[in-house]
Image 1 (cartoon, rainbow, N blue to C red):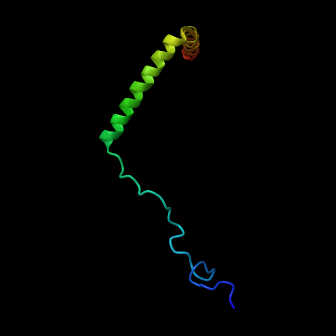
Image 2 (cartoon, rainbow, N blue to C red; image 1 turned 30 degrees about the vertical axis):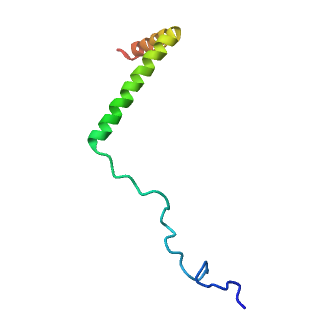
Image 3 (cartoon, helix red, strand yellow; image 1 turned 120 degrees about the vertical axis):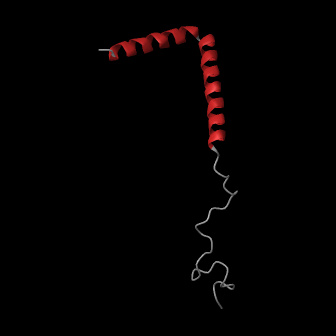
Length: 78
């Protein structure tokens, strides 16, 4: 009597087929330069919109941030 009645299923003596392959959905084809630029433009538009909204909602903090940034820029001038 053997410990594993079906030697083909899970036997330690046989290599596992497909052990290094990932299971899951197939990879998407690489995006084109046009698609990447379109996504980047959309992201930059949304980022600018978010910054404008933040400036309207928190004007005091925005003013302080502008002042700090201006001070930082002055320190690098020679």
